[in-house]
Length: 595
Image 1 (spheres, one colour):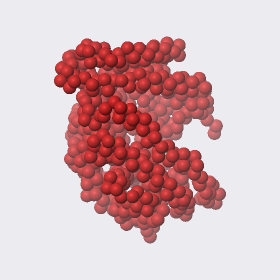
Image 2: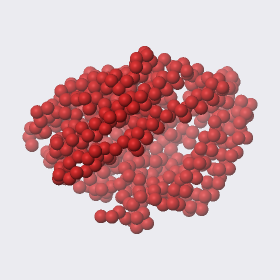
Image 3: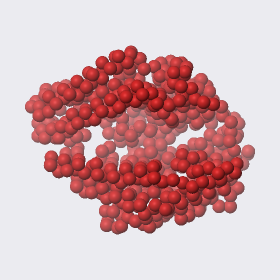
Image 4: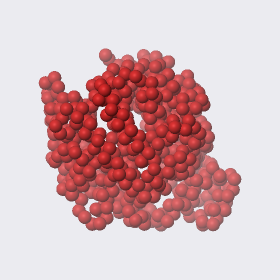
């Protein structure tokens, strides 16, 4: 069936943009205000060190311009997300992007000028009540003082940063544009050309021949270019190591974690905790092999459904009720906010022609979050709704409590709020569902989340840590050496599975590796969320977690997570989450014996 155009969609299930600006004319007026405010920031350059009042005046101006611009930009971006093909929205979005670049250039003086103020003088300024809202931001700037170079060398590094994107850009061009894939024969005997998109579909096929053929032909193309991928990734690692060294960090890992004020010991703690429980992954793989009736489990047998498809039709209205019921442990106020989200059109529900695919949540400070869905009445859609509403409530509570300077939370805590909701929905379904096949389906869905988000992402984290250590030690990063590291890790994490010569090159297709030491946050976020949700269900007290949702970016991520009862400097949260994985695995194993 052909998709409807945006104008033919039912407004009942669409965003209401009048909460941001009542009309497009009002948006245009706000755009001009943001433009003028951005241009006016030049007047504050060279004045910030004159007095506490001058510093406050400059920061207030930057903050006000940033908030105005963000609201203008998000209005345009959200319109475009609803219909990417509309020329008017394309033009609005492009204008905002241009203005954003101008804003970034206009505030380039801010950090260097603040850091040029003598430390004692700046400390005295920051005691003034008018600067209280900026204390964390300035503290964060000062924390980087020891790793900030003189102006001339900073300019050189800034110029070099563009060249440092070359490995990433080259990866994108080769992987997304230049590479093509051969055809395979699908389940119906049709010849179809492999693409990045449909590889994921055929990887999940219930037909092992289709899975194997798609795996071999897909990774076979990566093998053809493996030396090129190795050279590109080695270049990226060299840049990471160079920048870390120049700024006085002990390692590239330390440098990457510095921005969130996270010690390397947190990274180590995650890896050690996962290593201590790899036996549970072996148990899970053995269960998959047994249920699928396989003599051996290959790496192309990890993504296909372990259980027969179970019909779970859940309409949008039913999902609203289901999610609200599942999230009752978070308290009455949280439930009222969910009602508010439904009533005030925070969610854009159904797919239309030109609409952005997937799902996201976007907070608008001082207004409310906007959630994009593409709802198709499945249980997965209900989980997606719960997930995105977790982000939305985090944004709403942070925006409600924090001013603009401190409202935006960091990626390390971002996935916690969304995953807490998914865990609570899982637990609610298991509590209320009596059909054994459905219960098994829900448990398997939960376990796959663990495998792909905790175990797999930690494997990735170990790989990039080892690659950077090799570079720092002067060991060559070649296709052969990188393949060996990746193969060894897969044989460790997936002991009992067949790791062949093609699986060892999977590292070459992972774009996240060009944003070094990022993926570990998926594993810590998921683990933290499972630990938090489990404690809420055990104690019946969500108060610490609800306080965590109000913090925004007012403190560092580890400090904020401690408010929610999670200390990532210790392995306890990860181990607690892995206890849940073990219990869920045992329950699934017992359940499958009864089906």
